[in-house]
Length: 235
Image (cartoon, rainbow, N blue to C red; front, top):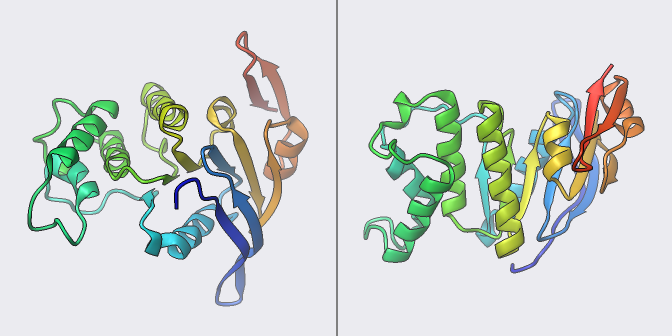
């Protein structure tokens, strides 16, 4: 699956009579950071779950779900290490290569010093970083993250997104990230997939106020930073 795009071909999902995802069609290009933006309930999580289900058998997608707060009695390190286990190695322990990847993910997500803490005793943000580290330790071509910044402070949001950008640039990794923060998306994403009412509204390489206003039913003003990155202020 090296360099392979993820394709959504007319995906429709219904819960009873309610259409949650309506004939969604889009091709997610490999080697990019794709940010999915849209209001609550527009079908973002349903879309990424449909993509994961479609490509799960190929084993090249890791996933960070929106809700990471189930009961986990493992240490932080062992939780991250779960990303390296598969059916062939589950009872044989980690290889040297596995340990390198797990150790790197722990450092990248600033979990050093928390390795022996039980997952359930971590703060919400620490749990979020732990689950992101577990996904990165899998070393898959594609990683899908559903609201990875929902429990993070500003600094750790930036650290997480910078790490994704680094992996894209240095290792040609591919990411789909569901976000609510349009300004974090504007800074880090290569493609913006905008949704509303279960439908694809637009795909953009650069965000604009007209599209955001249409998607979020709110007016926006755009201000360019000194670095040329747009900042969107709701009015």
